[in-house]
Amino acid sequence: MWYTSTVLGTRGNKELYDVAIIGGGVVGCCIARELSRYLVKTVLVEREAEVGFGVTKSNSGIIHAGHHTDSTTLKGRLVGRGNELFDQLHQDLGFGFKRIGELVVAGDEGDMPVLEKLKAQGEAKGVPGLEIWNHETLRREEPNLSKHLIAALHAPSAGVVNPYEFAFALIECAQKNGVHLIVNAPVTSIDVKRAHMILQTPRQAVAARYVLNCTGLFADKVAELVGARTFRILPRKGEEYLLDSSQQWLVKHLIFPVPSKTTKGTLIIPTVDGTIMVGPTAHDTNDRFDLTTTVGGANEVFGFVRQLCPGIDPRALIAEFAGLRPVSNTNDFIIGPTAVRGFINVAGIQSPGLTASPAIAEYVLELLGAEGLPIVEKDEFIPYIDPLPHFVRRTTAERRELTARDPRFGHIVCRCESVTEAEIHRAVDHGAQTIDGVKFRTRAGMGRCQGGFCTTGVMKVLSERLGVPLHNITKRGGNSWLVFPMEDIDKETSESEEGEPCSDA
Image (tube, rainbow, N blue to C red; front, side, top):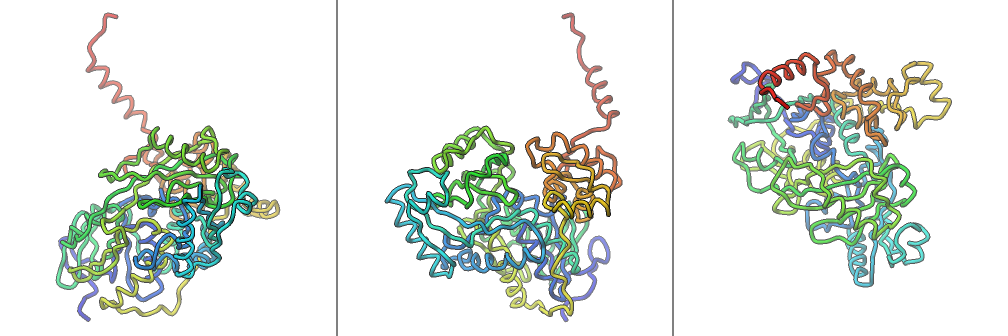
């Protein structure tokens, strides 16, 4: 072999991994789980406090049927396979997923050629069950949509997923099968050696024979660290608005308008958890950190979706957020080897990247094999994890049984979503390190009051389980503290008062 088991570097002997994945979004986590099937020593290095905290957490959560993209693009070729893989992944990992179907609606006769084109494009790719509904069928199936809509393309294989829950389940399964995870570790430089690379992070150095660049918005910057930047990432901002569960009866399907050249449009999305989400906007930006929502964005979204479904009520808004899509200047996925031996880009993963992510993992495995990595299956691979026991979804008998085994199931911490203390403890068992980590795993804080009641209860459990004081608990890592020690506040107040001039007023 042309490598050794340890590497002597600037910080002493280091373990040599076969593959280092930079970036713990759904793509990086899918690849990690796929590699965990094989005798491949793998590490995933993530800059945030938990996986799924970057682009993934703000994803719309749609599993596309595949008719929106044609097979001349890489994303068009991978989306269908990705869609097919979700049923087995859901069965193995237990994340939130539903096939609710999609409707692309036509407002007038001028939209009909677009529906026909999408239908033909999908059928050529093998998308199942595509059918154009006339006005009467559309009104019968979705009576709350505008009566002015004349037709719709129905794609029954489309669905919705909780993207962050998907990422958590993937990495948990990967770790169960031997993958190492390093968080709070942004890669600051990459030293290219003859037969391996060394990733430098504030926490530690990581040596690997192959490096996969799955860094989303920062993929061009990371590629530049090794001189392999041949593309640009152009952030595209999207604002999303989440409505109270009182609106959930309005639609049954994903509702798409006829797409434009740059986006699939502003959508009405019934989420896995029973709420309705509307959005996103689509505005290019140069700021890779701008996650603000705006009055203009809200007006744009609600003005548009109310043309599709007049019953949508902006007063039912309970949360809003923004995400950034990592659009490449090629407008396609950029997945492949580079001029630097062992460095593979997995970049430009915009829509339908979530849908395609399991297929991207298979594709990357093939690339690694072609690049010289021995791909040998393990004798034993554990494909499943034990999903979190969501108390509110259980029958009365099951709830009694759970509470008898663990009395903490009898203590409701989040009243809006009926999340129990036991579920919060289980979330920590499954890897939660932050308030958002608990929220995304359990829905504690996602209800009408948006954490106004339950946040302190969640923090107390995290403090107890992680063995740190309350003021060290963060919302999502970094400096996102919610409380401060009184002595720090008293000191700051005292210093401020000493520096202020006296007033005669």
